[in-house]
Image (cartoon, rainbow, N blue to C red; front, side, top):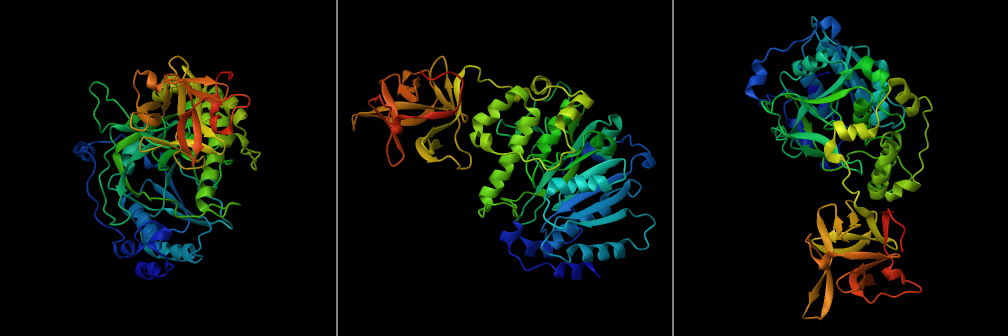
Length: 507
């Protein structure tokens, strides 16, 4: 079977299904020339590589409903750009794709391609009997692997020239490291391979446990192309010693399908004696989709809700496992996680035993030594998190506060300063009242934070009293916020506002 015949077998699905231009992918060369995106010094550098007999690399790729041309391009780039002496085995796990013939035909094609080669990696093809998700599938790959090192790669990537040597060089110096390449974006519409512009960024996350980039400062004499420490991985592309990952018990099997696994592994690595580095001299292209191109098995028919609930569950597991006394900050931002049930199905994975066996450090150590930017600065806050009125939450929409569904993505979070009474959002803006002389009333609006009484509030039971006017925040009609005369005994529902986390008793 030739590769063209293999690609023709791709199911007839739209760009919407794959979240990239599958028609263009089918027409794009399976092995194409990629631009040089590394610093010039990377190509001429001499790397201190261990002997191949001591550094066999097992590459693990899990996929679900990937277009045949894209999956094949990922595999062929590996075969063509990975030094044969180090390429020990390729493990492909089909996570119950709808294309039931894909794995069988890919196996046939790969064996044809490797026939007659002097040296070729061992090929292992696995298919899940039901949808298990990325996390379970990667752990399955770990159990099948026999190389000294494991490299985890997504199925919509292209490795660039010289990708492996810089990673092996760093791992040989410290076997408890995990290393990640710098990831170049591939445009999902044009398939243009672009140079990443994040050499001065490191991987991080916020207290809601969502990944984001964090600026880093170069030390004196440090060059941007040098490997550097990072609090977490930039996605799920990483390389690690198999022996070390097994000591860490792999990816947390309690996590479901997809979401949070890289953050969980990163925290575990740092706290239990490891390190994480991003290596700019290693480059790999990756398609970043605008949304998930797969379904989350769930009781929820709405896939957006299913994805959010899966990520919420995984995030709660991470918070309960690793954040220690700081987990209250997670719950302040994600109050719905409090009622989320953690139903552990894998009793063989015990975080407490793991921590004891590896003498793992506390999360406070992580904040002091690894990710200082995350250290909480809200000791001066008397209340935190979403600000709820009934079943609606206060949201900043173009500097105008409105009440929306609390399940809305990127819902605003607020902090009430216990000293000044400023009510500020995580974006750094403050809720205040401004006199509208035309209508002769005070308008509630959001502005840059100022040292001004118009932005000061006082907590009075469940009410928010505007200090300058002594009026109360009120949801008067149609989810619009206004200032009204404070009413007591009983407090009307329209004037009752609850923060996700109250640090002080409401008086």
